[in-house]
Image (cartoon, rainbow, N blue to C red):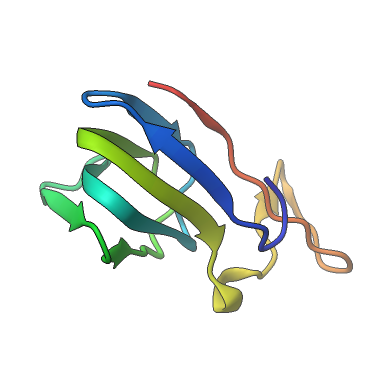
Length: 103
């Protein structure tokens, strides 16, 4: 996924996905219920249908479907700023990507 194009997902009950860098990624639950946890963050974040979660923390997020769920992931408009790529920062044309993978 790049730029601000949403990624729509359907997760079966107990399915889990990982977002390698969740900074600026808005997680919106359209149906069902999700449990979201960030690496090294003690909070339990529950996102029910109609709710969303957004963080500025550059951490991995695990998304767990507490029941069959439909969700979307999109880069928040104000989060489309340069991210570190290796040891340099891309400044001219910014393409923000994040990897979604089975956890």
